[in-house]
Length: 267
Ligand code: 1HE
Image 1 (cartoon, rainbow, N blue to C red):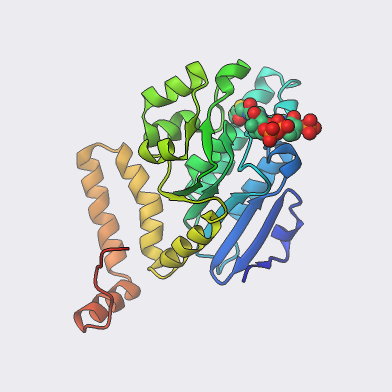
Image 2: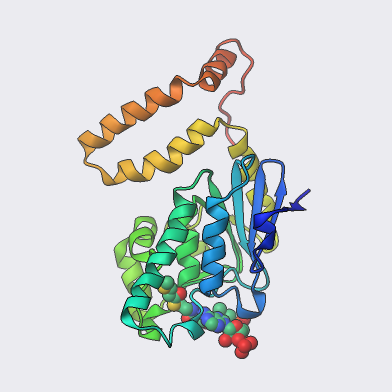
């Protein structure tokens, strides 16, 4: 049962944050504006991910209302000068960096529009669950602007540069199945079932060693950017750090003594 949090995170009025055990649910809560991200909301997202409660081991990110997120609040863009615009983009980068390289894995539950900055925040999460209604677009192309919330770095790493070019040059929109085929979506569900799926995924994550989750989040994307030689060396260091934790030793012993689960096929 998810209960509302108290303290700092409860004071963030554009987010609805609740917790069940080690799982935190962060819901974008600006449904009348389709969860468009204005300056206040981006600051609240940043605040949340740098102040996760100490007992949280996984986060689920979702959106209230008919859509996950309509991206940048376009009404705030009109007034910005050049320096304010670059600083605004850097603020988004800081917030989404806090998600990607934070303390715990984040699972996004996607429905309806996942567009512009909505796709950018989804791309900074570690696992994406898409309901049937989800669709993906980068309308920056039509608005005469460019992506500024990390899409040029994160989206090609999921779907490839050529598909992203197509989305931006032509306004092409991908549905949930295409999103899955093109690497944006890890899990597909019927409408209304994404959150339950995310909870099941979160429970699996929280049943594993926190050091492994941390290594996966922090080492994998960085190693992917290294030369093979540096990557293999970094992998060896991470492997030895992880395997020498008491928890890893306990888990290995449990398997050898027949007390741990075997690897089984799902479904
Ligand atoms: C907004 C925004 C927004 C809705 N900024 N106010 N993103 C976009 O270009 C997407 C723009 N939005 C849409 O295409 C549609 O709103 C949706 C497909 C997401 C949803 O459609 P619908 O029919 O459910 O809602 P609606 O009637 O269009 O919108 C409801 C209200 O939300 C309405 O305001 P109202 O006061 O008239 O009720 C809309 O104006 C408002 N709204 N989306 C501001 N985005 C760091 S770089 C990132 C760059 C980007 O993200 S660019 C992409 C921006």
